[in-house]
Image (tube, rainbow, N blue to C red; front, top):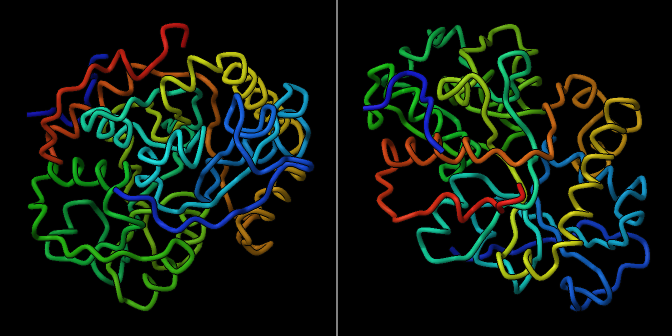
Amino acid sequence: MLTSRITGTLAVLTMAVPLAACAGAPDGGGDAGGDGNTVRIAHNTNAANLPVRIADEQGFFEDEGIEVEFTAVENISTLPPALGRSFEIVQTAPTNMIAASGQGIPMVAVCGATVDREQNPTAAVIGSQSAGITAIEDLEGKTLGVLNETGTLHTATKFWLQQADVPLDSVDIVQVDGPAMADQLSAGRVDAVETIEPFRSIALAEEDTVDLGDPYLQMAPEIGAVLWGAERDWAEENAETVEGFRSAIEAAIQFIQEDRETAETVLQDYTGLSDEIIAQTELPSYTSELRPEDLGVWLEVMREVEDFSGDVELADLIPAEG
């Protein structure tokens, strides 16, 4: 059994909707997937992806000789099989990478994205006080709204429930779109939600809600739940592009720290969220760092609550230079 905090050791693509492309970026393929050095990138529309959009808007990719094309795919668990065909770099999660490796998909991390820390949690299980939810143990026999059942957040929540001796089959799981979570909670259609920014801040602004805690932080005091991945062969053949991608992300993270107002404008542009919601949003702790230790934690949790039994070499998922 896992303890309450682990100190661990080291699909089919859904219909995708093009978001935007760097000015002048052509559509085809080439050394890096497009004409010249065009990189096709897929991500969903939450705050974790702000640096990659800033890197485009502020010309940091251009500075590295990279043109980009973005595609919105909300369920990122569908993305690993599309690497090498539809995309060069995708937003992914440690659980997705581990599962892909177990299925023989040669995927590798190329850049970090966010880290959850006790000082800056970006996920939460949020309960309705009127439904009697003030602690994780109260979820037994209740209805929990989730963004999806295949992501790291739900895996972490299941781990937390198990550690609290809440039978997983006693909790009714309902999928709820992020923007609707606060309303569904207020209306009593769900008793609690597991969510991320910006939807976390929106739900917590309601009078009746209570923050039960960040599921990720039940696993470790600090852990990454999102990163950027690519097909191994492509990453090895395009090492300069990968390094340029990471450098552009680092520049974007610095920019966000120095110009929050512009960063919020970019966030609003690609999420379509209102001024009020953007103002309430707590931005994640961004990083370009690759964190191999996190994969060990995630693998242990997957074996515990997802019945994952795949044979995975974690060292193969992180480049030696990472």
